[in-house]
Length: 128
Image (cartoon, rainbow, N blue to C red; front, side):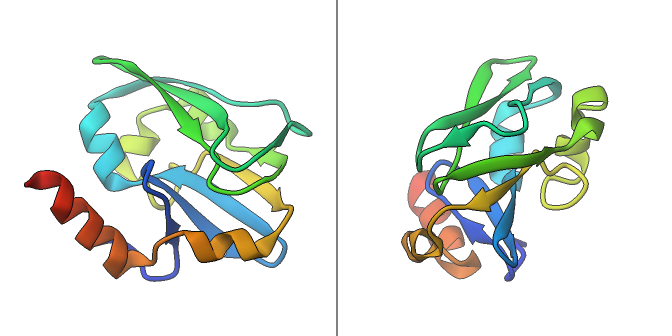
């Protein structure tokens, strides 16, 4: 269910690594918890963040939720498509519904994140 090539955080974000950069989005679990997403507040390109710092906001019909960066880095691109069509996150959270691209400050931070199997086990623990 969760792509094997991604890294996952306990805050339900995922990262796809491409060289020195990472594409960031929220997981299928997160978008289901949120419900219909109606607005995405994207950061400015050039913004720097530390790991676990809020970097974007997603608003659904139920609530407003912060998106946290699993690693430290600098925003190098944002997905303008999700700004215009927020429901892309509901339709394709691990693909077209990506939120932003970061230049990673320290790749060793990836070691603190989960792979797909570990994330699925983490989710099972939340359901009990």
